[in-house]
Image (tube, rainbow, N blue to C red; front, side, top):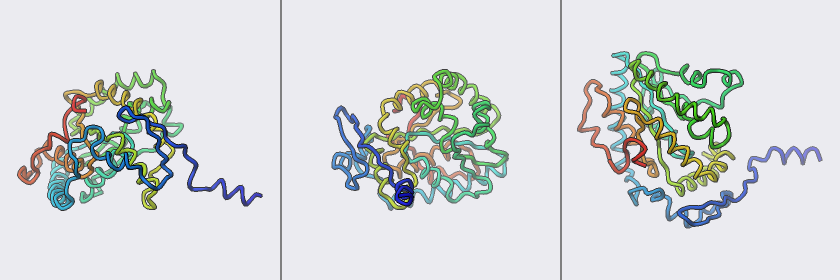
Length: 301
C-alpha cells in the first residue's frame, strides 16, 4: 500500500481539467491532455488576435536576416563596452508569447561576460519585506553591460493582480510609482527598452499544447499556464491598464505582434539596433521596421 501511494504521489502528469473558454464569441472546450490538436486551433492559430500575416516568415529568409542582425549586435556590444554604456531591455507578455526565445536569439553571440539575462523566481520571504523594486535594481547593469529581463517589475502590473498575488492597493501603488522609477533609470543614462510581445489567444493555446506534449519542452508547462489561459479577459484588462499608465515619452512601450516568432525576433533586434548610435552601424543591413509587426504604445494593440 505504501509503495502504491508513493507511485501515485510522484506522477509526472497531474490531472488537468478541460478548459472552458470563449474565443471570438464562441464557447470552446479544450482538453490539453489530448495529444491531437483540435482543428479550430490548428487552422486559426497564426491569424488569431488580428495577426496580419497568413504565413510565417520563410525559414531561409529568417536565417539570413537573423545572422546579419546578430553581427550588428556583436558590434553594438563592443560599442557598449568601449564607451561604458549600459542597457536594460525588459520583455513582457502573456505566457508563451515568445519572450525566452527572443532573448536567446538576441544574446546568442554576445559575450556572456557582459550580456546577462535576469529571470527571477518568486520573491523570498526576505524580499517580500523589501522595497518592491529592490530585487530588480540589484541586477541593473554596470558599465559596458547589456541586461535583459525575462519578466520584470511588471509582474505586479499583470500576473500578480490577476492571480491574487498582490493586493489592489499594491497594484495601484505600482501603477502610480513605476513612471517615476523608470524616469530615474533613463535620467541616469541607461539605455532602456520595454517590449510587450503580443500573442493571440488561439496561438497561446497551441503553444501550451506543444509544451504539454513535447519531451523537450514539457518542463515549461505548469498549472499556472492553465489557470492563466482561463483568465484571458482578466489579463487583457490588466495589460491595457498597465500599458496606458506606464507608457511615457522617456520610457515608451514597444509592442511586437508575436504569433510568428521569427518576425517578432527580427523586429525586436531591429528596434534596438536602430535606436543606438553604435560605431560602424550598417543601416542597410539592419533594414526597415515592419510597421505591421512593431509599433509604439497601447494604441498599437
